[in-house]
Length: 243
Image 1 (cartoon, rainbow, N blue to C red):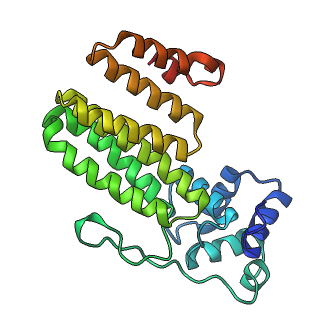
Image 2 (image 1 turned 45 degrees about the vertical axis):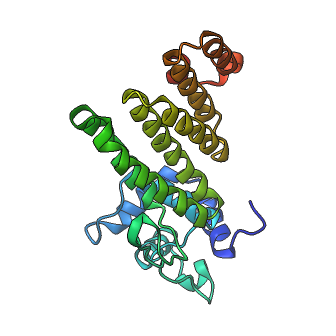
């Protein structure tokens, strides 16, 4: 546990672990105690939210504070202390896709951007790269701005999603035959993957760079990058190995 973790966040984790509950177990319990009273996030999103709460990355809303207390059979004062955490500050988008004032970056945005990304992949089949590039770039810039304002745990999650957005922009430029722009975005993808501290994404970014070099007819470059990726292939997921 990080020494900077707020006391209420450490208490949340301790209460969950004392009850031998996994993240998914607590998510299920929260949905059970909520009943028909409220419509909660889906289990996968809820697990992510719990992980962020326990790391002190963001504060549970009033609804989730109430449900957590009900699940643990504790009062808010017992669980969160006398100076209870406040409700999250909503985030806003300023003109030109930049974020306006925000002391809080909602973790639900990770799933939001991931869902949007799936839509972009589908749109590519119908719109083609030139129509889609400006939209994906604008969203990548927003993700990058938000990650700069988010605490460590949430920042890593946003950077993982941002890596996928940068990779898509690189592919769209490559598909459009604009290889110089694609190379720049392939480099951006690799940078974001390193910042996310995700070895799978770093390997994936290198694969993307190798794919670009096939279009530039740089055979040795393709081999060098592919060899670098496969140097520790036992730790790579099947998708990266096949790519």
